[in-house]
Length: 307
Image (cartoon, rainbow, N blue to C red; front, side, top):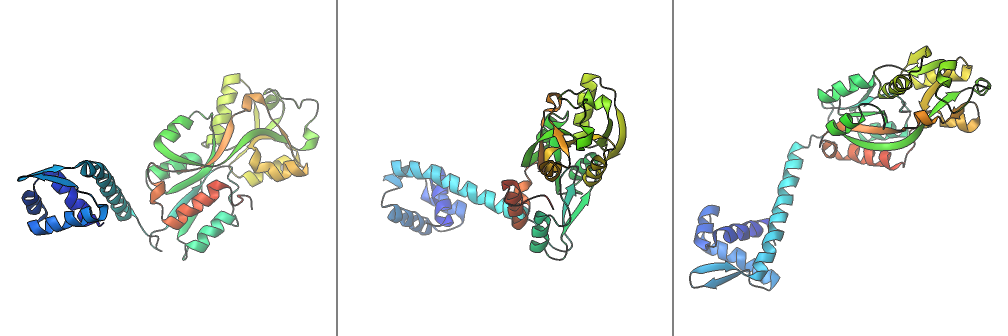
């Protein structure tokens, strides 16, 4: 069975006239008859019944017609996808924007994988505030954005409507501090945010938007000591005992396991946070195949995000 035979069959089924089908396809009538005969030989069944000069689809022909249309539709989709495909080259890099709380460093296994797959530095990464990264996605200055997105952040629904979101890892949100800071005030009550100096993510990040929504909802008055989008700096300041912070648990997993930091789950801050990859609608499948595979590896949890 060939695509030419399938196409010929569909045209004959539409015209129910071998001569007219030959004219539409720009071939001779014997050529049409040969194509149909080859299909019938393969199926060992008649696709058309001939009554005098009139032609009708047989029951087998009716069954095959739906299959033939689906085959051609798949071929058309594959052709369009390949035409949209842009191979990676030195002059056409993939731009990956890194947002808050990703744990994504220069020696991250996933980044090493990308650099090993695409030579000549065709994978370009840069860090920015989430608002800036979304603007870059909209303007095609970025192809992908990796960042933390709390499920209850005010803009979550808008994000998943405007973009495709590929979850990498879901984590809970903790109030975090050095052990000596966890004194008698340390309790599962959002008001503890009023009782300690706070180390918070920078404004214009999805994580800070979520925290601000909780503060506004509960009418909490806070004392912010430091605002930064650098999670390494947040950890260092928390370890020094200067204040407490609100972070995704995965950003402080090693410190929590070693006991150098203490995490507290506060019900009012109970939203799950998704470390996810944002791409423009429908474009995830258009990312060159090795990078697409890399995303699958990353989202499957086969590699660690932590340096």
